[in-house]
Image 1 (spheres, rainbow, N blue to C red):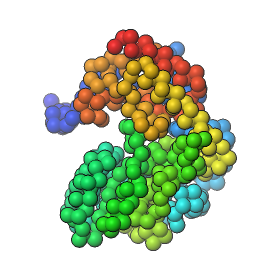
Image 2 (cartoon, helix red, strand yellow; image 1 turned 45 degrees about the horizontal axis):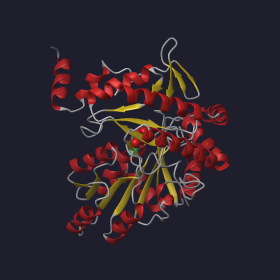
Image 3 (cartoon, helix red, strand yellow; image 1 turned 90 degrees about the vertical axis):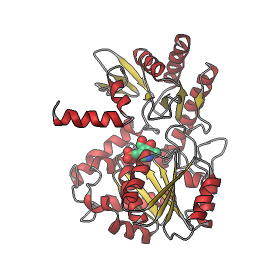
Length: 411
Ligand SMILES: Cc1ncc(COP(=O)(O)O)c(C=O)c1O
């Protein structure tokens, strides 16, 4: 055994993720190579096509011809990749995008970095310092936890609470009330269940105990927005979970992701101008990491145009497709984890062996989903996660339901 083998083996014996690696050998749905893409149909081998229910391009911007057109123009203007770290220089399109995003979500300013992950690992430690305290929602995204761990390594305190358990959260806030640096961290829309965080209650607690509420809205931005009603239950404009909840931004740091609904490698933190200058100096990804590729800035810019022109129509279509999918799966007798109607629809299988068997069956039947074994989820809660997009068709949903009907017989 050489050094590399020993290192891999030592990690496998102590890390729960070993199971995922073992599944590589048995799972047709992992590490798939897309050889050709036609809408949401993907060719994965010589003549096998699968329908994509694993995409998080919720608005279908990845395929929108009017968005693709803009990319060439911007590359001609800025080159393919600016390559400066943001502290040194940024193409003007950054500042223009930051203004547009601030207007859309309703904050004084925004700061763009390439991913939500970079924002979390850069900004949480920058704000918490060596002696602050973090109250992390246990169902929050793992990348937020990574940011918290970096802060904890510097001496900060990390506490956690169960999603929605505001009694425990309040007790923790009281316990640490004298700490001047307190941060509550939640997902805006939870990545496995599509649940919405109760922003109103969380903001009230943040204000009462002088804490900052940090919201990772990687999934919500672009899909949920202001003034939800019967006609558009996701709300309008796709301006995020805070607007959906009808709240302002007092005591809130809102993080929007663009790699899902906006199909762009970009993310932003919405904040005051003063906070922005603080983060420009204190958050390491601003000066030690590379910027977004030009193509992503261009698709985000054009995506914002398309959002103004027809985003609400896409969101309506997305709601209808998702609604049909959820109802159809429930009628077939599946346990579907979704209370919000958000296009993240997890179907409970609840056992690793059955998960592998049904995933392979689905793939052979021409269906691609995100397969979530333990430890991505709790043991016994294994799911196939289906994500719907406005680029899926009604025929895709019919095929999905037919496949699950056959799967039900098999189970
Ligand atoms: C809730 C949540 N936060 C953060 C991320 C990471 O986002 P990014 O790709 O922008 O780093 C994801 C990705 O799936 C996510 O689901």
